[in-house]
Image (cartoon, rainbow, N blue to C red; front, side):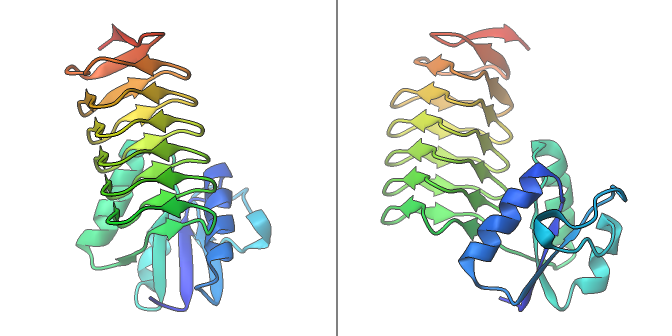
Length: 207
């Protein structure tokens, strides 16, 4: 771990990331890179350049990609990793992490999250505010689980999925890669086809 953390993305999500990183108290300095020149100093932290400037700070800094869009976050993070950048994971001090839980690089675990034993979280995931993931969950790379979502035990979520605010997933459910689950949806059946699912129970409406 290095003394400086650079957060790529300084919008709303980036501000939450900066808050978590500050509370972790592991870096002497934290700064942003962002391509929007109108963003100046979110959370009182400096924007020191654009995304393309990351290479300037490669040897002196850890990096975190604070982009909400799963596909864009994956593109940027994978490019950094392929070029040997140090990408870190972030865990809010209030999160409760069970025994034998694996958390991938570039993943953030936000405030109030509970992840129970023997779960595995992939790379570049967003496990958002006050989510709960019970035992033996497997969350693929670049998944976003939105605030207040609840996943029961032995749930599998494929790469690049997005679970909306307050969504609920019953136990022993498999969700294939590329699914979007609407806010407040209740998932009680496997999702075997990529697409958008909404409702109680959740049903496919668009693929």
